[in-house]
Length: 45
Image 1: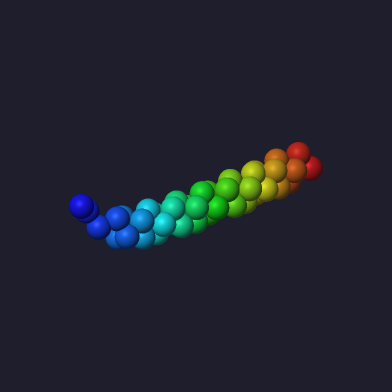
Image 2: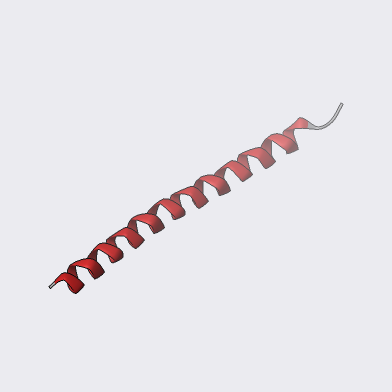
């Protein structure tokens, strides 16, 4: 039978990488929205 411990470790590593990517994209979206809102406010003045 195949060695499942290595596969489990790989899945855990990939899950951590994916969660880090999602977190980075979330904060990037918030930052882009904030910069966009600031630009709109500055243009409106």
